[in-house]
Amino acid sequence: MSYNTCPRLLIAGTNSGSGKTTIVNAILRAIQKQNIPLYGFKCGPDYIDPMFHKAALGIPSYNLDLFFSSEQECKNLLAKHTPNNGIGIIEGVMGFYDGISGTTDVASSAHLARATNTPTVLVVRPKGQSLSVGATLYGFKNFAPNTLKGVIFNGVSSSMYPLYKKIAQEVGLKSYGYLPEIKQTEIPSRHLGLVTADELNTLQQQIDILACEAQKSIDITGLIELSKTAPALFNENQLYTIKNKSVRIGVAKDKAFCFYYQDNLDLLEENGAELIPFSPLNDKYLPENISGLYIGGGYPELYTDELSNNKSMLYSINCAINNKMPTIAECGGFMYLHSSIVTLDGVSYPMADVIKTTAHMTNKLQNFGYITMTAQKDCLVSKKGETMNAHEFHYCKSDNSGNDFYAEKPNGKSWNCVYANDTLYAGYPHLYFRANTHIISRFLNSCAKFGGNL
Image 1 (cartoon, rainbow, N blue to C red):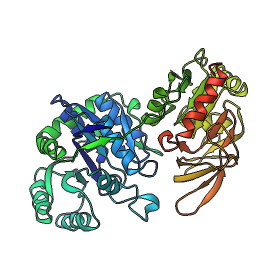
Image 2 (spheres, rainbow, N blue to C red):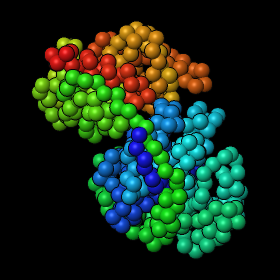
Image 3 (cartoon, rainbow, N blue to C red):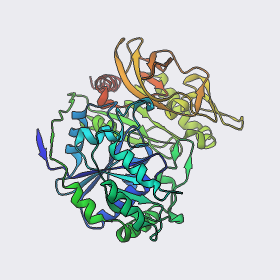
């Protein structure tokens, strides 16, 4: 057990689209300019926002998710990563109180803030409002128990800010400033959310512009002082150490495959794995001397032509998996293993041909949200009857999504999914290893056996 003063803040929003990511990146860079050590965190299962934290900070950003982890586990992760002489900035998810299935605040930003005793600042975009902002702030402040301490107004002018500041004070919330509309810093979106940080050539310039504005219009010193009011935390983490499992695992990492929980990668390394990145887009073959594969999610549908034309990589992956190399393929990785992907314009692109069926892009979300999966047989990541918490978020529909796991949402909706055997997990659901620690031991055992290290 280790003690950490753990200065920290949670930046929440009234709703998706309030500008949380913009405000968080502006604050991160502004504080970083004061040479204060920082770590980024994201409430919930999002992959893209942590990529922006990493791009802004140059350090990893971690997910804190109360569907996947206990309240104590989230405290442990905060205490483990937040520098004693620095600050942890947590970006909220959706609206402040929006939790599982939209009917409860369980696993919401508000829940995480309460569970970790983290002071919260609410981002409000009062477009088309004046005095009505008071009703919004009053509602958020009094709706349920919370740790709200202040507010930042987004997309407002310097002339309107004094009015909004006065309204916040009357409601009992301190105003920590505002950010005006800055057109050149807008981040475009697509079907799974914001475009990824790696796709924006001007990202550093955009973040610098935001930070410069934040230094003028946001009370950065006040936010730093607020972070120091958070009570200390104790890190009770225990490593799930698996001895004698030194293995090399190839991890697909490029613009097409970039959705990974940093905690998943850390846990693999902490338990003996050497992670070898490779690019299905640009590399001709898999890395040499690997004994396992991890192909995460991302945007393979945006790079179907490049992926399909890289025949040597497709052949290399097909041979490796058919030769029983242990493989985890999630969502975009699962799509890549199909015989083909059909894009919205009806064009079919051959893929790795491991899963003998076709994936079709659609115009709407398919299965979406948190799920609990039950294994229908012993396999690479689970024994029959074991459960795993996971989540899905995709616009793609497979002709056959598999039947080796039974998935159920908190609202009761259920379906079969995933192809799984002794050496393969391939399906739309994204896995969070810390919530399902048997994944680590079974996967690494299988990799060690394949590589002759067991």
